[in-house]
Length: 466
Ligand code: OOG
Ligand code: NI
Image (cartoon, rainbow, N blue to C red; front, side):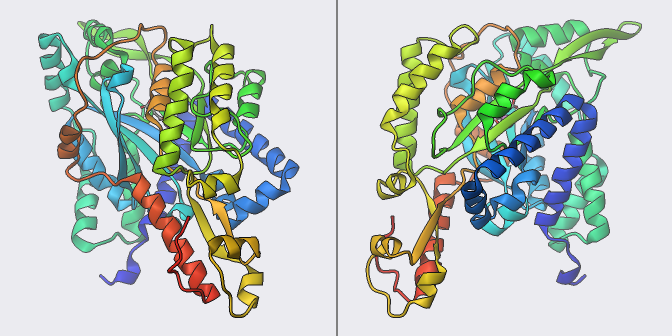
């Protein structure tokens, strides 16, 4: 087979993302309503802010806006995680980052599978936040054994997808027909099953240990538990949700509202209570389970390690001052504390760049390309209008926010505290490869954009970059 017959992994990812969204909209109609609301708010935001539309146009984000979404799944075994890594690789998605949710009382650790190149991200920024259950945190040994045994006998992948993954790895790609078949087969892993693999009594034991343990162990596969479109104005979507019959969680996770958005702000609607067929002594036993919800996100500029440290510090200060987890009861006070803590975070792009708090993508301007014999350093070139830059969008997730999103899933379950430490090595071993460092990816994109811009301007790139 010749190279040219292969469909690009980016196309497969775009197709898969579309197929997943269609499946989830039909499974969870409220998600469809949320998409509609988000696209209405995005349209009116762009109309009211032409400069925003222009800036998003430069970075290619405008084109990808309506395609943009992330999803999340949770798996139970090293085998499942390792195959998922290979399945996502067919779609050009690599594991980026390591997130330990245990300190926040969620018994999982996670990574995000996503595209990493700029061009690939433009074609499809689809990401999947993927968590591996930490069964060793189940204290009841008998229950832990039961969970192990239940997970050991399930197969979450179709034979067809396993074959196609092997074919992709052997041949280096998939042709059109195989790619389409791959999308259809891969989708099966993420499908909802209304029938559990355990009895209602066993479900309740698992749920008693943690809702997420039940969510992973009691079902045939890692159903997609939410999809998340990207909005340009999360406060507006949050405010408009109730009028469309959607109940949002109490607070927006992440940084406060700012002129220059940083990192990621997220909110979701509460997980739906869905009826489930459990295995009964004679036939089916009726019960319910809640796992699936909808989420929205607003993405801002990616922060440098220095910017991220400042973010973590200010978020920590606000949370400490609140003296507990944000909830319905203290939401207003939390918003106030967050806003005042973040007054210490510069809120204009020139400062964010000059103080090396955020990452940018550089480009030569038309004026710069027309000018001859340019001199000067980066600040000089920017000042003269020869070099321009746009904020680099944050493509990843935030552990404290993710914990808050998980929490919206757990109903009124009390907070759980785990004594166990982080266990990154176990995760990496299960995954079968290292995770990529997101900060290195942003730094590389910034550096190469600057190098390209300077060489287009005919300036040697010996100068120190921001
Ligand atoms: C994942 C929750 C984390 C996010 O956007 O931070 C997440 C889950 O509920 O499985 O999706
Ligand atoms: Ni999410």
